[in-house]
Image 1 (cartoon, rainbow over the protein chains, first blue to last red):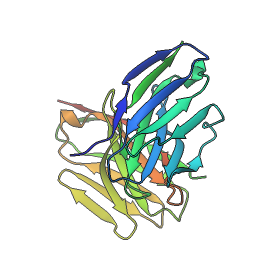
Image 2: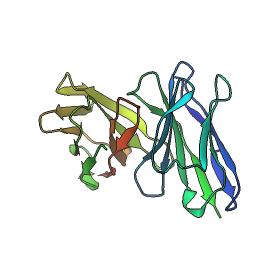
Image 3: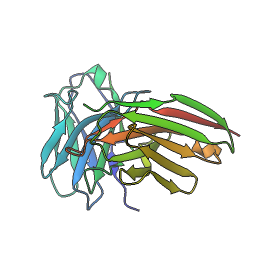
Image 4: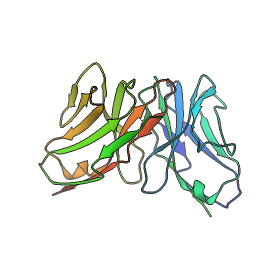
Length: 112
Length: 112
């Protein structure tokens, strides 16, 4: 069964550094998302992406964040200058419609 | 924006008993309601969903019921097993943009 994959599984970085989190969505999906989950808290929406542009973004998704679909298979989240509070699990999700979303295993980001 | 409330926050049952988790939402235009199971260190996995044109959907030991008038939907797990122990999240997608608002999660513990 096809699934969303994410790399790396864990990332440790210094405050102020740039990180790129990578996702390979399910191949025939058209809608792509990033969510984050701070330890012990609920899943929070960051951004949705469709037709090569951002559909919606949350207040969390400020100018430090960007997304890109550089080719037909990858979907990336870049954090330009990481802050301590960016430490969280980051989940990529994809769907063939605006409703059903399939989540990847996540990248655990730790900012020191 | 959408407001989603999930209860209870924790639930402990004996193996074989039933478990019920409830979510209420605020946007009456919502018409798709998924439930996710998240095991430790993994991403949320879609386990069952329901659309507003039906009141109940069942898949083996799990079922979801929807009351659109009252704006709530519930997850029912029967004959619980230890492997059902996880955090369960309801979500309400914003069908205009695909953004999903998640509930706070319910930690279910099934005692053998």
